[in-house]
Amino acid sequence: MRKIGIRLRRKEGRENKIRYRQSAGAIAYEVVIFIFLTLFSISLVLPLLWALMTAGKSVMEYTLNPFGWPSSYDFSNFTKAWQKLYVVVLTPKGMVRYGVDAMFLNTMILSTLPNILTVFFTASMAYILAKYKFIGSRFWHELGIVLIILPIIGNFPSTMQVMKQLGIYDNMLLLILKAPVGCFYGMNYLILRAMVQKLPDAYMEAAQIDGAGHFTVYFKIMLPMLLPTCFVFFLLSFMGGWGDYTTSLYWLPSKPTLGYGMYIFQNQAVQYNATVPEILCGFLILMIPTMLMYLVFQDLIISKMQVGRLKQ
Amino acid sequence: MEKIEEKDAAMRGGILPKNRKRGRRFLGKKTVSKYVFVGTLMFYPILLWLIFYVYVNFNSIVMSFQNIAIDGKTSWAGLSNFKNFLAKAFDGSDQLAISLLNTLKYYVLTTVITLPIYFGVSFYFYKCMPASRIFRAFMMLPSIVSGFIMALVFKKFVEIGLPGIWGGITGKDPNLFPNLLYDPDFSFGTILFYDIWLSFTAGFIYYPNAMRNIDPSIVESARMDGAGYWKEFWHITMPLIYPTFTTFFVLSVAGFFGTSGSLLLFYMYSAPPETSLIGYYYTVMVLDSPTQTGYPILAAGGLVMTAIAAPLTFLVKFLMERYGPNEG
Image 1 (cartoon, each protein chain N blue to C red):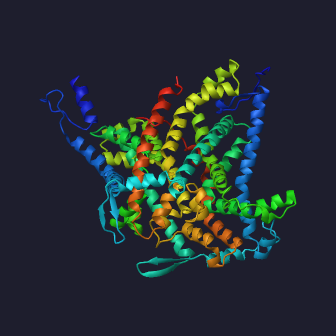
Image 2 (image 1 turned 90 degrees about the vertical axis):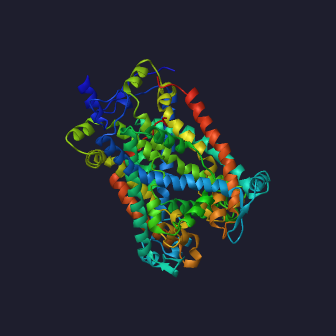
Image 3 (image 1 turned 180 degrees about the vertical axis):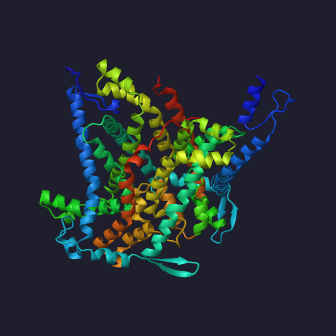
């Protein structure tokens, strides 16, 4: 097959993207992947679009035309969802009803505080193990690498038992304080460590020569340089935690989050007398903060997601 | 030379006295401050690790040799929990055996299907082929859109949309169309499809980012030598992103036995038996049980599975690093 070595496009700063129109096979590859991605993107957007359309339908309209456009958008479904979305949980004080506002508060707390702690300690461990040589530094780093790939299976029963023994089960404060466990053996640690290694030592040395202590160097010079990546990790954890239902399901049953409320709401819709449009309104309400955050920070998020080798 | 040594020692956190003997470390003020800093920041994460990793796993090992009564009292069980677990694992009709087999099928099919697609699409993004920037923006949607919406919509589509489409095409009654999420012949495949569908997005982000680190001059010289896409991908791109691929592949092997898919999302505690995965099985056995009497068998099973998965994971890592392509 004759290959035509014509440089079609070369843009500033995008040297890797040199493409040549080559054989029919290469063209076929582009077409096939393009079609696949088009279909895949449509399949990702369609659920959202369907949720938006359905959220504005009446029950009758949804029953008769579940996949069509609403004849008129009924915003009252959002109000109904807000009123119907509640969870009744058993607490030490008895049965307590949690409405959207209380679940929203729990969600804010559990999406923010644990993630701030985790990101801070991950950055700290990455910095210490990358920049400091001390007794055991190499051990802790290599242990972290081993722990990332060492599979420990079936310790959920033991974890549940220990959490109950230590009083962490169903205790929000202790659960938040427990969050940084694993901060030196996760993917975020590896990414941050790689970033710390690229930070020039000259900054540290210059500051130390000027009399700065280790804490000053870290908090005033190095940590601010890691902040963009730390912020991305926080954002991703926040977005993941916003819709999380497993924390309340597993560990914090008396402090339901919005995610847990929606999980119960849609699984027990008959009990709540909730219709599909109302359920979807609830989901959309849940989704708004994360959508806004992604729209604002998408370039930053995608650019920081790089993974390298598990080095020992 | 002496001044350089003193400066060097000062930077490392210790001041050398003039009458020091060679090779002996002196614990100066700066060394102490260094260890105070390191200790302060490391103390809390290590304490958490000791409690929630070391102690929890130690407790799991101990639990696997116990019986736990309804009132919570424990007694020595010897190896009976291991025997019971293995008996259930090889009893084809037991839910545990079904879950293990399903997990193996799930893992193999997911890997075989997703890997070629990851690389094919990632290379497309890396080359900035038509509309790649737009497509990349869509890849983040599952991270943003609540998993509930994706699951609920998928559920409704399967329950209402597909039968309607099928009825429209064939002219038959849509009620005759099987419920793909609950029909024993289709439920496992449906869950597998859903999980693969949503799993694409992560691979479509990490691999292109790894490819972007490739030196453009290597690509350019290959092109000048007449290399097409396939040769470039196989001889340049793949070897250079091999470390990233190894990382993800090894982690997937490590997470093999922990797979629970999206079963909890679709079914809560009532997944059809033919869809059950081992991670889901463990979750339901713990969360849906009013007592801890079943915990010891689960702990024993966890040890057995760890004993299989841990060496396997390290073996895979070793083989991939030993026999994989060299970056040079």
